[in-house]
Image 1 (tube, rainbow, N blue to C red):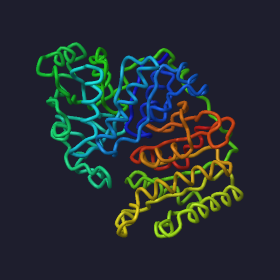
Image 2 (image 1 turned 60 degrees about the vertical axis):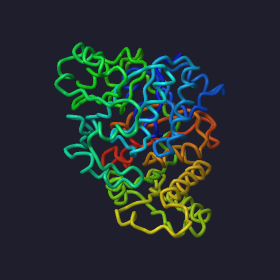
Image 3 (image 1 turned 90 degrees about the horizontal axis):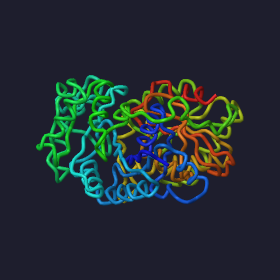
Image 4 (image 1 turned 30 degrees about the horizontal axis):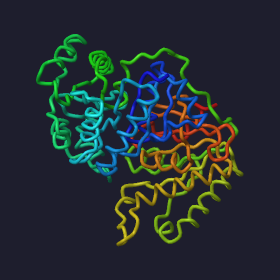
Length: 428
């Protein structure tokens, strides 16, 4: 029976946290939405054998009411399978707008659990995200001076987490500085027990993995914690070293890279892969004219690539430079970002029908669309590729594959420059 239930606001965030939990000794299953925790035999058995279950939602940029509703549905589903402690996982760059969704979802989860307070810990030093004096840094840049200020859906215009969060929540927002964290677990626990934090959301500084371990230990009695995947560093599961799922595919099986993200990191990864892999850029005009025909053309391209060299997975990508983001959307037309998600999701489904058994997907929204299109209900977490990126095995039957397929769902900002070419070595 699961020990821990987590709610992630996007699919790459779910596998990011799940990767960390597996490394900490938790046999971990990612359920695709609350409906993934069903009585379907293969999914139900995976959940029963897990120590932790992460529900992957597509709520990060959803309307606030929808994000709250789906998060509460996930909480109820996790409670039904036995979870008693919970983790709300959001991005380490705190992706949100002045309306939410981080604050409203946190409020709703606390209310549903009849709890008064929790912590806010987006730090993840392994990926360059740290918090000091309540300000969020991306490597050595303040959040609002980093590439995140140009994010097409959640442009981050402020780095001060207290200011960012205050308009999103009914609760007061407090802060605890690094000096208190560095004073140790007991000192931090005592600080959090002060009456001023009793009904608050408390932003806690952290600039190192050891800081996160201290915060995790000091908050072990809280029924709900919130943060990025780094906060899981302080957890310890019962199966250290033996918690990974095995791969579903074989080294000779066909693969493909589907990159929908426009992030600076993914653009660099695309540039690197274009020198080494067969590639095709999505043509937005062609997609608007006849998306079905464009998808068929992309799949035919992939088939040709496999016939020429099965060891070189084709790359289908949406954005190669910032110029690609500056195209005007015709009046009454589907926004380009949504069109890209739908197209790559359709490509994923058709590629699996054509024989693909391993897909690497870049971008949180794209990953959600792909997993939904494939009909995957659960993901068993396997081998880590990079910080926050892992291979995951679907349940049997997805896309017609008797053994399931292997998926790597990569946040746009994560992974080294060579991830599109090196990730496959981790499945061998």
